[in-house]
Amino acid sequence: MKARIILFAAAALAVVSCSKFLDIRMEATMPSAGIDYSKTDNIFLPVSAAYASMRLSEGRAQNYVGVMEIVSDDADKGSSESDGPTVAQLDNFTYGPDNVHVEQMWNYYYDISSAANYAIESMDLFTEAITSESGQQMVAECRGEAKIIRAYAYFNLVRLFGRVPIIDRSMSAAELASMQVSSVESIYDFVYNDLDAAIAVVPESHTDYKGRYNKYTAMALKAKVALYRKDWTEAARLTDAIIASGRFSLMSRFKDAFNVENEYGSESLMEVGSSDLGQSTGGMPLCYYAFIQGPRGNKEPFQGWGYKVPSQRLVDFLDARGDHVRKAVTLLVRGETTPEGDFIDPGCANPYYNGKVYVPTRLNNRSYNAYGLDHNMRLLRYADVLLMHAEAMAQGAAISPASGYSATMALNEVRSRAGLPAAEATLENIYEERRAELALEENRFFDLVRWGLAPQVLGRLGFQAGKNEVFPIPSAQRELNPNLPATPGYTY
Image 1 (cartoon, rainbow, N blue to C red):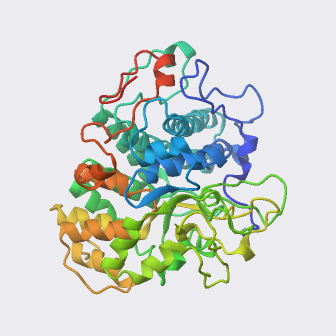
Image 2 (cartoon, one colour):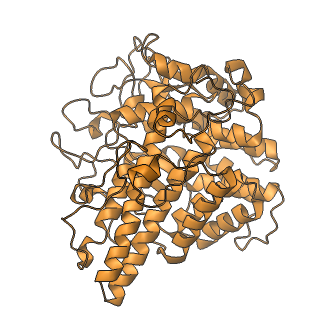
Image 3 (spheres, rainbow, N blue to C red):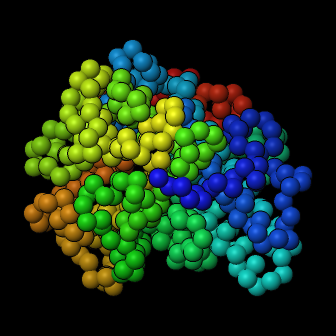
């Protein structure tokens, strides 16, 4: 168990206002008392609060898996047939602007942005109060970390909703209620600028807390953003630099990339931390991402709500390509026992559950609803970096790789770890490899949309071209701010 000081545990010391965006109140307002800006020991506190804002609460975990993955062809709603009717709307593309999960995801990413804005503005106060060179460097680095977090929030906002307002500072209620949406390109420019600023100042690694975002986190995130902009050369340049650094490598076994024991390991570039701190009760920095996906109706503590289950379509896809290694890791199968000795009861509601968030019973210490609370969310893995590099190079990126990695080399390094033979780096092969390697990691739907394949692949599931590429701006937000436009294709 991670009975160590976990990153983000100090968040309670830096209280940041993070309720609904555009809730007609002051956003990211500074506390009137509590932080001494002249002390270097306090510099990280507002950034810690920003990290904490990324940790999914129980309800948000259901929102997250619904909007980010259940809409793909690789996952079904799961749970019981009658449970979660609003999640079922996501599964069959019948959701509208009043869907609670869509609204909560809008709130979630604006909460993260608000916390990051607070941290960035706090750094300005530390800059004024601290005179030492080392203190100024620490301030610059923490500002960069906060910009990585803010960039992550806006990358997801633009992917989910398209045109949204850019809130990059504290604003009055009146200002918030009059904000206009920005163009998609302007939002991507904003994300690029934040990540470039971070890359310039954030160190390559941290010596205090595991999991703090570093220069390579910013580079990998920017590379991913570049794929959405079809900025192939920039994506290849960044992924090449990450590969050439020699700091990252695939875990020897595919399974190892998802184990609790290997969090923040050689394959990790960006995670959201969760830990019970080795305790069975009490306050803990917990994330319910894994719990929400645990086998429904199984024996406690190896049980959860059973959402976001692998679809039969995904199972058939892995079988057809002989992808046995990944299948064994990605699926928990009803009626079978895991290698660690945990049994999935034949009476469980769904035939499969997500094996990538599996946490053996011996590691579930919490006395109630314990499953998976020690499991971190993996947001960016080195395997993703390799596949991004392969795609960018195959698309004709104009670089001479310093790493020496061609598209074929990057693709086949990932395939080799999965026990698959070498393959040519065609776009079709790269697309399939992304699906197999990153299944159930909240990439598939967005990949299909950016490749232009969503109507072809998801049409039979209810996806409508020209509509479902983005989610609707929530009705509740348009009531708060009439300047927010109706999203085309949706009925308000």
